[in-house]
Image (cartoon, rainbow over all chains, first blue to last red; front, side):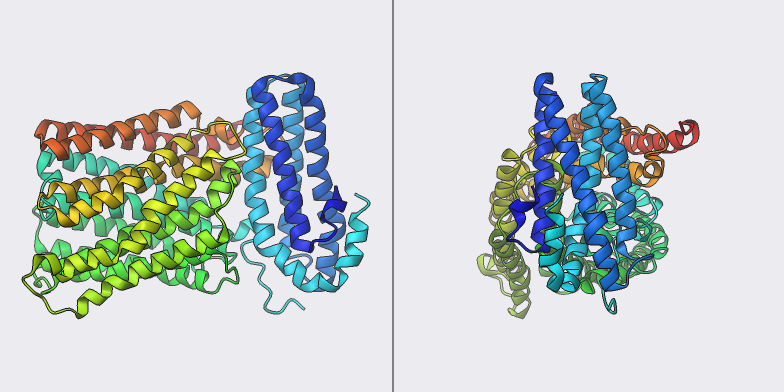
Length: 151
Length: 439
């Protein structure tokens, strides 16, 4: 997945990945609505893995590089982003339980909640964090991109 | 390396306490109860001639009590997230809240027969409230490094609020027996333009560019369209001021007041034609095909907006005063009020969930946002709001006193519906924290 953004800058790369995850959630909603349980399992796995992979890429590659170059570690924006990542992961777990139990309404409602949480999270990342990271990590982007390619 | 690098807005701790936006949001249903009481008490007089004190009172309950309160609460919440800078001295917001409420009550009191000093008190209260709001929020928006169209639109809206407030206070002096200014009608016309198009329109338009794509995964309008709309909005807000340079004349067709109304056309077209058309199209093309109840409000409000340019033309050209009242009714309660009502049903549950329940995620099973406020409840609120809107329009056309009082009843019901929903959400969020043990 990461390779599809290989020609873009840091902001475009991560923002594009946000949109990619959004599209995958749209598919889950449609499948839950239509009751297509045969396709739901695969689609859910795809969405769940894509979302977790995005969070891992940020926490293991982007944030450490940003913190090192900006000097903003303990009190910087990445602290809050990491906290919100944990909340996103926990909601993914809850949705997986609801899907596993066949509770469609609960899965849809929790999915809507996850959507709201991630969207406000994405606004902060796309509006502030990525532009800041692009400023301080511009020269390292090629190297970082190679690290991200393994995800 | 991090000198001058903004990290504001990226922390939940920098968002205001839930009490800040919630206290303003709760004033919206209370103001609806006040509006309903005015309609039930004064009857059709409150939806008749534009210069009737009851009409002016009802209008300002709508603009200050409903729209301003809701929008101020939303700006306190959204400014740190969208502009990326926290609002300084956030505790002042509690003072702003009290002063706005005092100002509104005194304003209405004077217009419904209270003493002149009530308007003096209203003027000072509202002026201090708006200073307390505009300075920190304006500073936060002005110092933001974000340069997108949403932030620019929010800046325009906040600047418009400062201008409309100054003009409104000049006119309000007349009700405090300090004498109306000579150009009262022109001042009122431009006050109305800046209020509806600059403040309310600027905020609805710019916030929609953020929230419609976010909530519904709908396509954003092209950057060029957003810039064109902002440009037209600015032009339509500046041009009417040229009318102040005109000499007063007796030619009704070319009066400064009428020319000021015509000069606002670029802004009116941007806010009440292009924006609703593009946003309705965007909603139609949304990726999330599920119909969320809040979409009902967006669709209804934007559809009403499409009626406002022709209605404004009739209000400006026709002698029948009912056009002016109908225009005002639909603009305040049908367009802006409808969209604000829908946004509150989406924002309030999210804020309660975000502030009260996110600390529990991962430690226990948390309810969903929709679990805090059901879709059925939101749809009921919409139906009552719509009924009151139609009843009010019918009252204006027929000038029926019974219909006016029924409209008051429906507005009161809308207030109860919204108020009970907001309190229900707050109560559930709190109860969940207290009752659910960590598993």
